[in-house]
Length: 155
Image 1: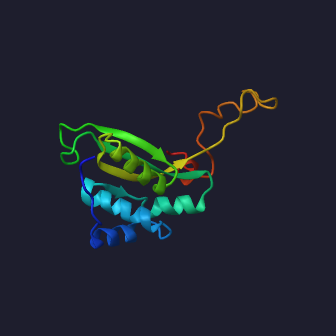
Image 2: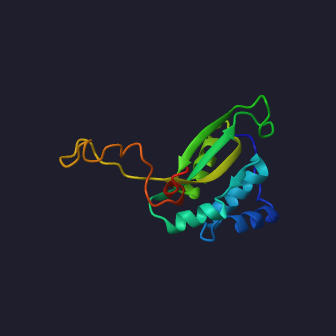
Image 3: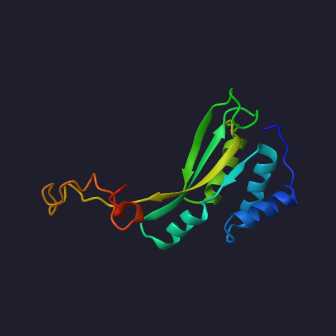
């Protein structure tokens, strides 16, 4: 890697500090700020309504989806391909992996870190001794109960 990186601007650090969780460690914050300044990284965190759902409902997991351009030209250029770098359980892991791939010269440009809330539900195990399709007919086709969007029969 023939690029040199310097300490990120304090303005970038301050913007990220306001946008990201307060418990994010300082080294990850500065590594992410350096990616913003040097590689055009963007961060998209959950909106307030999604954050409320994560905090108050069970069966929701937060992950970080990282995508990237294939060329150094600006994000979204017509000659760039966008590819998925990975899906991570923690922002710290995502940032570390992106840096590892940059050092390995894997073509990470303009990375976008997107926080996603993933709804997880359990379905009966068809090989289990107590479940048969007749016991819970259509269970695989029904959405989980208890969510406001599924309680409304007009959806």
